[in-house]
Length: 279
Image: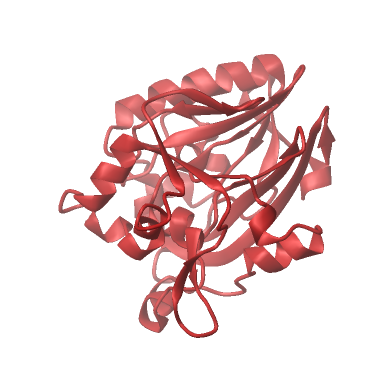
């Protein structure tokens, strides 16, 4: 779809399942299961939603999904199914991997950053987007290398360390930044120390990729958050700010794990209006 000078495409790279308690934290199951019915193992359906944007002649990829490096055991644990190669989707848009100018991952957890690197036909680890600038908060990088005991399972070093190991493809940020004209990154923290959201703007039009600040449509309620959030109160603060801006300026929101209608608008009273052109 077109928003001013923004050309936007959504790609669901992966379908998988996550524990409902992990996704909704202290929210009682009797409430969240009305919106996301769990299976017999208390797992709910999730997606990895990526955004591909063209703006001012540049190609930007936000979120890369799980990628192709997940072990067979781990893939079974998360019921990974129907993965779609992000490079295959880009080729359908007429974009080669080496033509991507910028890559933004909202944080470095395995289900967001797995596609930053890939195994080629020979099994060798390589950068998925060899010529792109990859924007990561320095606090996220440092934490991912030395996470606390609870957070350690969320990171896989092969997903991101090759960006800096001999390639110098990563650019570290220290807070908010406009990394390209119209391409804004906002440090929100909360879920992880260096969590960030991407905000694309063209004139009066805007689009925000929310990452795990707002995973799915039930998380459009400010106090509904994930059990994995390190600083829940910070999550609430930044969600409230984003929702106020999104409703006021009619920003398009892209929810990174929503399986059904992941892009849409917040209307008065917090109602969700999906964008039919990105369904």
